Length: 156
Image (cartoon, rainbow, N blue to C red; front, side, top):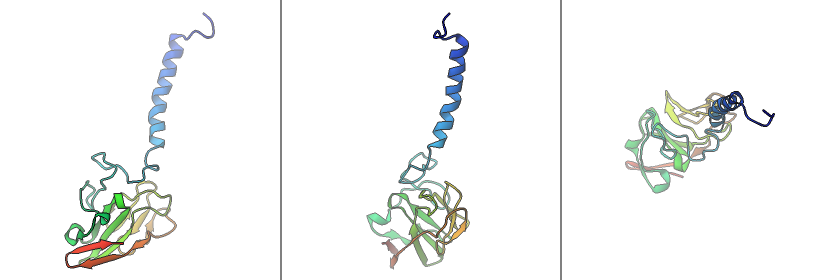
């Protein structure tokens, strides 16, 4: 047998190494290149989780007015396709921020316990003013303008 002929052991060793490497390589590339948002539990990268962490199909700021009833008091809603998060810290007080983390540009993925959370490196932002509450983010989320008219709101 020559050095170029693959032995059964070499072939099996190569396949085993490739089998271990593929999941590691796949895990390294996940998340940072997705510009519309992290995939949710349904596997849809454009439907962002609501305050409870489940996917939703709500009207987005870009498609017009949002019903105030869509934004939970003490929480909020992420509009991944528009890169906007709308919160209602207290009843009747609406805020909107960029949904892109100021650390490395990852989209935020959930709102929980009074914070807007980024899945990439653990940054957390206040639902009240977008300020950094934890993690490596160097700056608050940029604030957007919210206009409330009756029971609808628009974000610009």
